Image 1 (tube, rainbow, N blue to C red):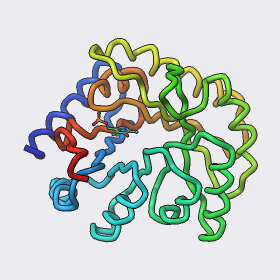
Image 2 (cartoon, rainbow, N blue to C red; image 1 turned 30 degrees about the vertical axis):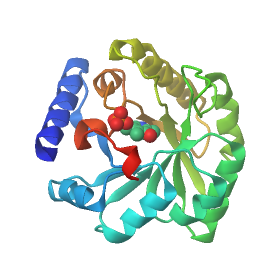
Image 3 (tube, rainbow, N blue to C red; image 1 turned 90 degrees about the horizontal axis):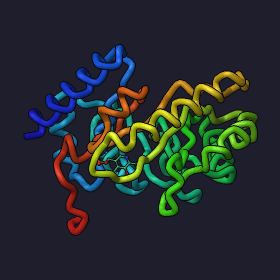
Amino acid sequence: MLKENLESVEEKIQEACKKSGRNREDVTLIAVSKTKPVETLQEAYDLGVRVFGENKVQELTEKYDSLPKDIHWHMIGHLQRNKVKYIIDKVDLIHSVDSIRLAETIDKEAQKHDLIANILVEVNVAKEESKFGLMPEEVDGFIDEIANLKHIQVKGLMTIAPFVENPEKNRTVFADLRKLSVDIAKKNVDNVNVSILSMGMTNDYQVAVEEGATMVRVGTGIFGARNYAQV
Ligand SMILES: *Cc1c(COP(=O)(O)O)cnc(C)c1O
């Protein structure tokens, strides 16, 4: 089933690229493997998947330890400052930076490892009360403030769109995040590059790609429904 799911997601990404005149290479598919056992990730790996997304620090580090080292791990979930140290040298990208203090902690831990941490700024585009992320109007000032941290590099923006039955409803959310990134890019802040747009999940990744997503985070569409009771 995993193989068919992957093929189907791949096909839909290609379709969305074609429809919007984009290149398939410009969209990275992140296989969101949270709650799934290592064996399932290994199976996906054997089918060619190399980019995995996790939202819990402990789960990510356990999987990191037991799977091949050429996997690219992405931290997509809310991150507590006291846990940054466990993942700083293991992840390619942290998608969920939404406070100065978290950015400062990531900077400090990255410095200890003599590396530069790649981060995205999480934006609550739809201004949902239940969601993490900065309000769109805060992003500009936030980026100015963290741009001088030497051991982090802002790479782009991320959003978790509202849960909707009809993915078309999220089109404006994705378009708004893209507009925001264009506005920020125009300012040409040193050490800031907003070329990555992480947006779109199982329910709406095609629309997100049509609106400019460069990373889509797909879990259920690849691995099937999650059973949180088992974790
Ligand atoms: C779980 C999760 C996803 C994947 O969700 P699906 O609907 O299963 O594709 C994407 N992004 C984040 C931040 C998540 O926590």
